[in-house]
Image: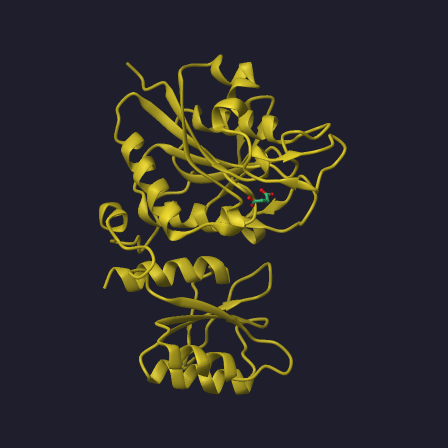
Length: 317
Ligand code: SIN
């Protein structure tokens, strides 16, 4: 028998948010409604087959933590291993969705789909976007052949590698940048534009089990993001190195250029054993490295995803 059950894991976010007035799309509190309430409000969600719901966390995703990531990864691994499970949908806040998506893609090896979805308006809005996004995410999770970690918002499917929040307010808040979207969801049907994401090249060897057993306050490698900008100095880098930072991602200008004062401090940090990676602060494009570049580039990852990659890389050592 084909696996048919979809697991919906709730983590909070605006999709579970509540405002005092229906006309208020911004003055709400995120993460108020439980995943069961969200699912019960959309009867069509369960029409296509069995659904299991579980509340993994109930947070505004700006407060995402290593402990929640570990919990989420553990539940994803648990359900993916069950033969009756076809795929997983995760409701998540939009603000750090791309980091969670990349984290899960980096550590989960699955031939089944893991679909993150979200909303830009609270559940109490006059015209909330969450229910349609959740329906679309279910359509992706049920699609034959779907696999890997993807994000669904406003009828568009993005791969975990490419997805990035690009707008503070509009419903279609995410983009896949140069890569373009993976698919569109149209009336419950998928229009696939390119292949499903396969396991990440250089996938982290960090076992989910070892992450679950970590002390999340102390055991994660300390990696910070610094930004290159007009008038930058090396002061922040020097202070972080003095405090024992283990990795630094620089959100560089343009094609990976770094203010000379900041660059001098980063090179010093690197010489002292700190791992330094250059990503670009540009929303599109990637750092194209040149022979002789002293700082490694992020292999196309945005600064926040490069930070996750660097943390997992340091953990795997
Ligand atoms: C959040 O990220 O949890 C709040 C904002 C949102 O979901 O749009």
